[in-house]
Length: 538
Ligand code: GLN
Image 1 (cartoon, rainbow, N blue to C red):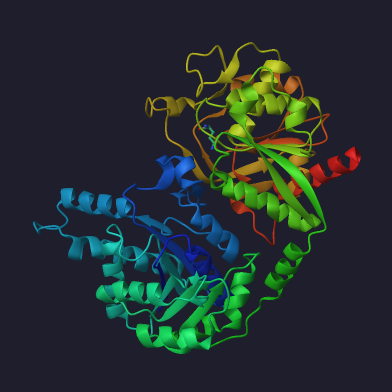
Image 2 (image 1 turned 90 degrees about the horizontal axis):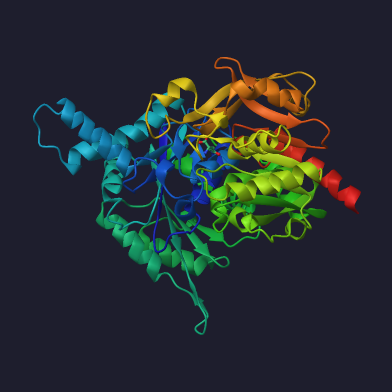
């Protein structure tokens, strides 16, 4: 039977609840258990797909095509497991499914209420995650902090699960803050006591406390917390500030966090295999060199909007023993006539244009692409970054006047990027998104096939517009290489350039599949080419 771990937060948000949840998952996996993770977001949006990246950060996409909270990206990178549609549940998703059932008459005339209808729906989402994945342990993080109005039905559902399944099948982790007060020079337990009281008011007694503090809280603080919060003293875990987040699982391991959970579940404590993780920590702590890569986007003021791209660059850097520094370039700032591109990209050894939606900033991105193409600077284009590379090539090399995407100009003369014919009829909003995994066949003797070392790949998508096959031959005749194709739909997935040290762009998002111990092939090759470029410059 699946066991369930729930991770709640108290006192303040931003304590690193997600990292705590994934670190525990990593430890349990390292002991041979099949783990799966879930995030509950209390907001009313059905998913973050329509949220502004400046407010909410990146939209992460699962292999089965769900648009999810960026925390799922952290989970996947930490535990190296692909998550699915059961992994991100919002209040909006819960309510819309309850209302749909109500309209269908499923409730047989009952008055539909928070308890039991909404709470049952929530419980089913927890159980579904266990059922569809066959995981030994499902770890569910509840977004926000205990006491928020939005999450009350979620907390109530968890209370019911604790009651139904019993404490040998459920484990509650509560993450809190133990602040240090300068002057009196002491750590304070009262905020934790208060937030545990809030949780207990809702009928949940935590099994473990994870205390974020600047340093080890020490036995006296732990005893105090234990007594006031009814948690065994050994279940009070310290989560001290670290300079390298990969240390966190090891810090928890040293305090026996995973053993406490397994003991309560009555599961055998198998030997943990953490050598690969310790090696990663060592690598990250001792990077020998640095390299700058430019990331040209329109949401650069919030780095979280590109979190998976930034992480993927870092991962590739680890492989080469390099720290990757990102030169965050606001694409709109490149649109001014007097902009000095040479100055902007002075220290950047590679240029990356990531995904994006809408027209704003696209001319600036295109200027960056021209600069990379003509100055032979390594270029990696992702999704919109591929579409713009095609447009730039059509305009400047093929001399195709007004070449553009119908996303920017629906009446344009030369739509080198366009909706698929059957999409045009779907809606006047521009059809539906192509989401999740699609197969791609690589053309032999291309950069792409060399990079991947195989001829079939699976990558994740999130876009509406496509390379327009009508222009394929013309573009190819001028030197644009089409190196990846989705055969089932005859769609261009990867383009590259000949006579350039490294210029490649994909319609999919490789960043979602990068892992700290296993960089994605495209990022690996791109960072490698940028490092070679920096050596030439020296
Ligand atoms: N806006 C483009 C499209 O919808 C690209 C999307 C993206 O970069 N994720 O096709």
